[in-house]
Length: 623
Image: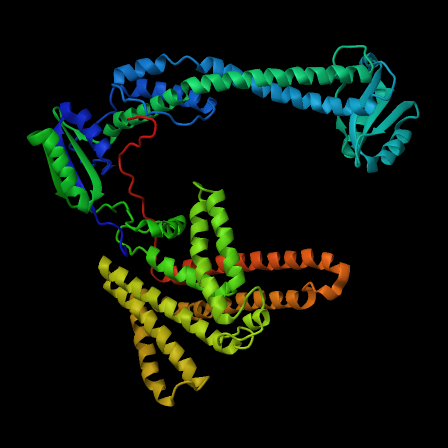
């Protein structure tokens, strides 16, 4: 749990005639990740001959699947041999009809948008009695469309500057818009067009109007009738698509699933090496799984297959072995960067420190309870998305927030004495113990960083980099001695006798750092001090939230004495508390993550691992 699962590289050697069956068996086991064979004495293997035919049908089936409407999964389809699979896939001929339906639905959507715009304009023109065929006069220019009501006066002024020989009619179609009809001599077309464009005029081209001599009112009736016909056509097409989907969805998805598995098997040999009669496969698998895989393969192929462990300088893939409970925190670690196979897995430590820091920052039992509820809603609303694990982490973090809210005696900015009228327990008020809490949080940060240095030293020792491991311990010595010297010299918190041993420890730490990192490493000492002081934000973020909450309660708390004004105070009061609560949660999440990812992880964590991706298949629609 503190380290990734140990990986083992293996080599499999067998007869080429057994290769397809072996690949199928390994895919069903789902335990190994192929590694490209790099032996130059071997010829690179090629994909199986069936690969081209499989991918052709797979692309077809995926295209068809995207056009079907999702249906409830029924009984899984029975898996079938490759030749029958290709035949059945080729026999699915609904693709052309589905493509036509989807294209027609897209076309209808465009036509409906055009008709809606045309109807909107005609609504504004329906009170004008003129023949729309006049719009096609080649000696005149016409402009019909929508424009903002605040721009009408500027249109009139602009037209007077261009020509007095024009007709301008407008009709309001909303609070902010009007329909504009403008006719003028055709030679002024470009000038008028430029002027209207600058004013944000949205034109309905005369060509959009049907070839007709109807009035705007009659044409509006026709447009609405056509829109209704398109709506009916769309309903018919959607019904047909639904019928096709109900009849074929399960089958098509099952064929896709089988073709994907076959394509993976056919392409896998690209990683292998071969001679005239034999093949060679190298792969990674979790070390605890080696015997199970070896036994399964020996049972199927007997002495025709050789399986052996091999040593390799290649960086192994990373597989984290955390329990399901830590899954959301593992996601947050992987979101930044996956640890390398030889690194420590920081998931468990992150699962302990992040909620603790979030709780110390937010520190209000009421806000913590609200965090719990909101996190639960996020989990449910975004189930199956990347926000679900974020919601789970947030929910875990809300529990310490409630605990520290009780310790700080904060309940939506109130104390429990103010709410209950009686004191139930002693508390540590953030507003009245700022200096004490600041010191506590600085020491919490120092302990957090010290743990990071210890983990960093352990990592380097495991990798065999002893000088860098001692450098990590040197930084730890500098941190401890620096705190001791500052506490003694500046604050007299320790007796003067502590100065000499602290200074000696400081020099030892400097020597270890210089030996491993050179003299340039010493420029990081101010950064270390800054890292420690960064933990003061735990108090700063919390105090800001407390002050705002107390001000809201003091100035805007609804009271019966306010009379009818209480109807104004209640929404304002609740709205401001909601704003402060959301801001406090957001700051606690962001700053808590920063203290872990930036200050803490930088002391021991490199990341950059590549995930273990076993060669396997998933079954959802097949059995």
